[in-house]
Image (cartoon, rainbow, N blue to C red; front, side):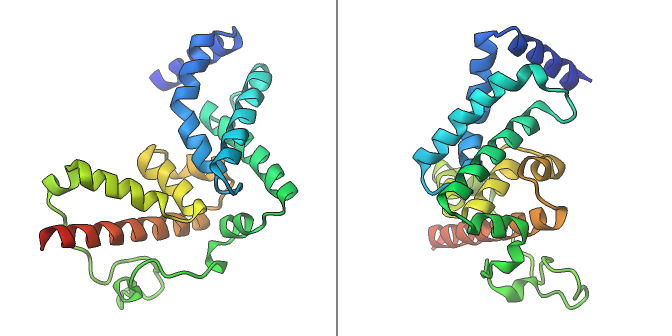
Length: 211
């Protein structure tokens, strides 16, 4: 209830054209908007343009927002619609296939043998050999956090957006699906691939650091 009340208060401020409320909203969501826009457009500059156009769409449409979804889901749906339109105009098609059916984009995230569970042959994605937990002090080290950020940035755009929203921003699966217009299966595939690659990168780094 507290979250609903806070969103209602924010909506009232936005509809009253409260500049401080709008600036706070931009500070909170703009970096994520740019990351998601990069799924569809080839450069960060283009992603910044899409995000800027999204904010204009928010300002122009806030009075028509009916609250059928959360405010941030609505904002990100505006973004994806703008980004898709631009991608079609620029002739980019791979991001759509990678989102609509990531299984059609073949890639190996980590050693496949680690995910072959003989007890659950129909459950892809389960660890056959679970990785050892990492020391907490290593995970908290600033250099490790930097390596984590680098690993996320190195991901394909679709995976980077999903893992950023789920694991960095703390979004729920439902919120990510609604914002990116993904099925549950496709969101799970993209998140699994992203987490696998990031974990493999961190394992390699921590193993090197421990030698």
